[in-house]
Length: 196
Image (cartoon, rainbow, N blue to C red; front, top):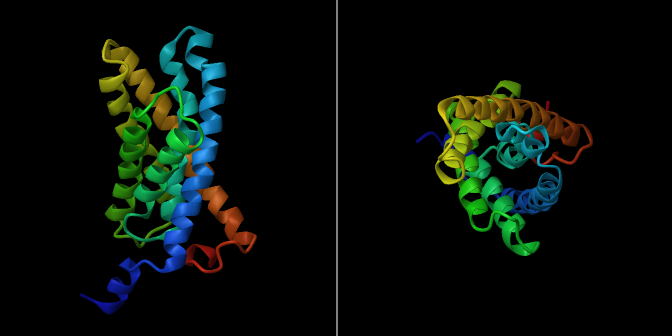
């Protein structure tokens, strides 16, 4: 194996710490967003439950951001999973219980697959958008099986389109903009993502 490729797959201590810290930060955000979601519940508010998926993109962001910053195999998955774990356990839990961990794994796999597709060599807006979109698709399938098995095909397709839209805009574009802002602020100088 090429030594440059091998070096790009090795985790440095700062990579591991960053995945953990991002996971904790996003875990707190996820917990807070869950409380907001429980209060607002867009789907119930407008009388059309699939509309709630428009708020889902926030929960997809950790994997995209972790992958864009750390740029190592497994970083996207690990960041999303740690965030789900933190939101579930450390902060007193969520209304969804342990299903949050499964969602974190599913969403993390979605983002991770996109970074793997590009062999961990492309970290631009397109990659972020695709990561948010695939995370949304996998999460939608999981939610249909776990929570919405009674929905007909029309509701499922609308839910999917709303969740993908939210994943693209919030997790993809929003995650990419967040990483660019952190890079401009000098917070990512130790990473490839901190260099233009």
